[in-house]
Structure formats: C-alpha cells, structure tokens
Amino acid sequence: MDGQRDATFYDERRRLAAARIGSMARPDDSAGHSRGSGSSRRRRTRIGRTVHIIPPMPIVSVTRLHLASRWSTPAFIWYSLRAARQAERTPGFRGGWLASDGDRGYWTSTVWDTVEAMRAFRNSGTHLRVMPRLLRWCDEASYTHWEQPYSVPPTADVAHDRLTRDGRLSKVVAASSRHAAGQTSGPAKPRPGQRLTARHRIPAPTS
Image 1 (cartoon, rainbow, N blue to C red):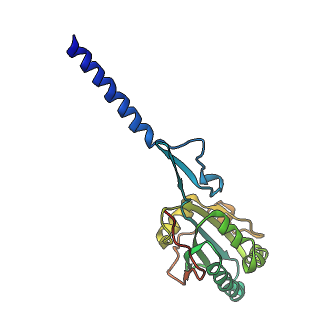
Image 2: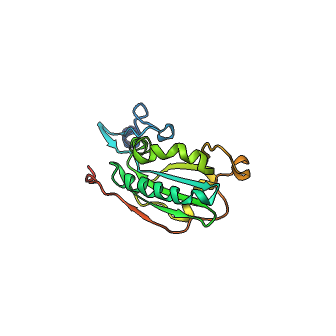
Image 3: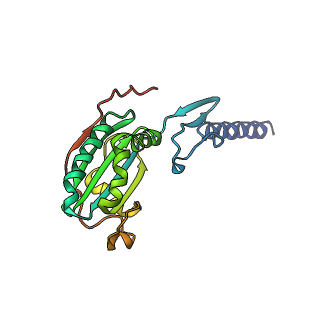
C-alpha cells in the first residue's frame, strides 16, 4: 500500500510539473495584437512570471502601376526617382527596389519597420503630390502588404506571385480591361532595376 501511495504521489507531481512547463510558453492573449488590422503595436508573450515584449516584424509593400500612354513616361520616371529618394531618407525605411516589366508596368518594393512609417512616407512629400497625377496617368494600379521576419526585400518572383495572389486594386480614372476585370498584375514579371538603400540612421536592435 505504501508503495502504491508513493507511486501515485510521484505521478501527480510529474503531472503538475508538466502542466506548469506547458503554461510557461503560452502567449498572453489579452495583450496580443494582430498586424492584419494594420496595427504595428508590439506583442507581449508571458513566460512564467515574465512578460517579454516582441517587436513587430518588418512590413513589405509591393505596388505595380501601368501607364496608359507612353507620353506619361518621362514625368512618371522623374517623380518616381524623387519619391524613391524620399523613401530612402524616411525614418523606418529598410530597403527596396524599383523595376519595370517591359509592358509599361512599373514596380516598387519597399520594406518598413512599421505600418506607421510606411504611411508617413505615403502621406507626405513627393509621394503625396504625385498621387493625384497617377489617377490620370495609370490605367492599372495595384498593391499588397505582408509581414516577414527579416528586412531583405523580396525577389521579383516573390513580388509578382504575392501581388498576383493577394493584391488589391487602387483607383484609376480610366481603367484598362485587365484592371476592370479585377486582375492585379499581368503575365510579365518585374525585371531587376534600381536598388533602394536606407539613407537615414537605423537604430541598433534592442534585446
């Protein structure tokens, strides 16, 4: 009987210990936030009695603009290069690239620390001033955003795949048949173009 009681006692101890270890890595659901809603607030995970702050992952933005006429190309390129320089000097910018696909389609891929940093760029400077013109210049416009655990911009193949699969349409004045049909990209993939590099000081990661 004593041996049976001892076995039962130690079995119960092992069960409680296993349950405690399993709960140590359980996320703190009351403090977790999803980036799906566009928020970049930091997540909190509870391990034992310690709450660890998990910084948001970098966010990738891929856009494709298709010019309705070749006559718009010089002005479009001029504004694109100025907007690219603006992005490189915007706090929170990590890197990216510009490319074309040979079918009057122009691609931009950028990586940002947070959604707020991306929006700060979008709603200021050259980018803000050129947006009304793009409504007239373009007959196709689309974009997509996603998170990734690193700051390296996606390859052209990945950008094309993600925009085709998950992309959303932007407003244009005179839509092409492809845009009107809801297609976010054409068959042509972006070809390597200008690389964008952060020109501002990037703070060192915190532990």
